[in-house]
Image (cartoon, rainbow, N blue to C red; front, side, top):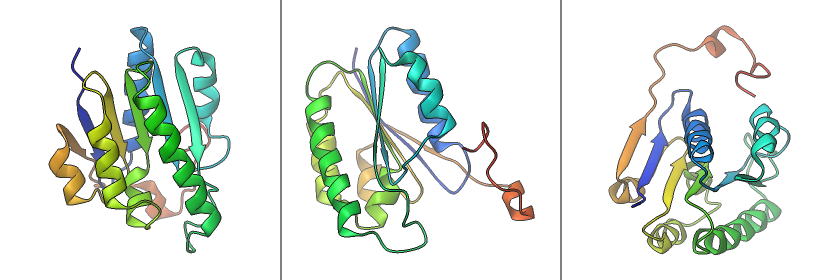
Length: 171
């Protein structure tokens, strides 16, 4: 089966959730999935849930999760570069059908990864691999290479009323 490049971007909620839904659907069909989470670090509810499918879905985090309001450190950059190398190996191994790069658009925007590196990674994608990139602010060069682009638009969000992220819903 031919794979495509999908991008979930925009300021609205649901980019990672859409990618997780695709991962779950692929696992249900017996396909192996590799999900790389950039910037994020820690135990999110989705990580705990996906452990139940560890024979088909692998999740690795390549971030310290500490600099969202500050600047990334050299350690943040080193972790991300290690991730890019691992993703190349996994994606080209022939073992996985779906590769998800969660928050890669944000990592690009923050300068943690260069556009050339991400475009090269996209070019390395074997034709049978579905590649999913998530995160706000997708670069136009990335969008140009995509086969499917979904932009989440925020019309209203309860965060504006001071509601914090809720366990099992946003985290």
